[in-house]
Image 1 (cartoon, rainbow, N blue to C red):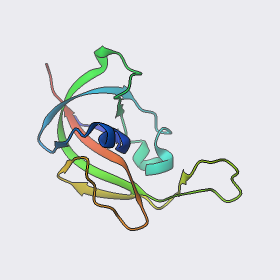
Image 2: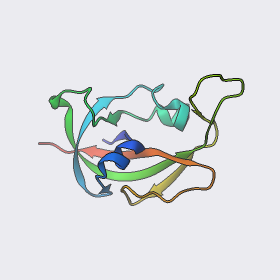
Image 3: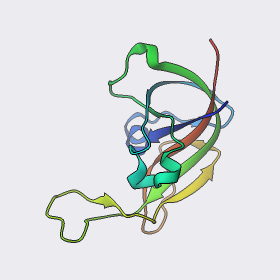
Length: 129
């Protein structure tokens, strides 16, 4: 059985913890709903996400899980201010997301023209114990 985990790109920038396929890691995980990341990865891929890694609270110690990383994908998309939006926040532009398979994740992601690095989708297997 595998699970899909969302790793926010900002977590990598601030914490710099790298991981790669085949490694066993211990992450604090919280459940993710299909709507949580649909704006960035699209509805179909968002429905695949079981958990998100939580670094700054919001989950109890019991939520720490050991998993073996099977696959890693970088997620990149374009952000823009929606037409007529008067807020100060940019939004992910639907249909611009690119998924890039990589062997591992670290603090340094190769830039993709016109896109911003957003995070990682990690396929993993739970490890007992």
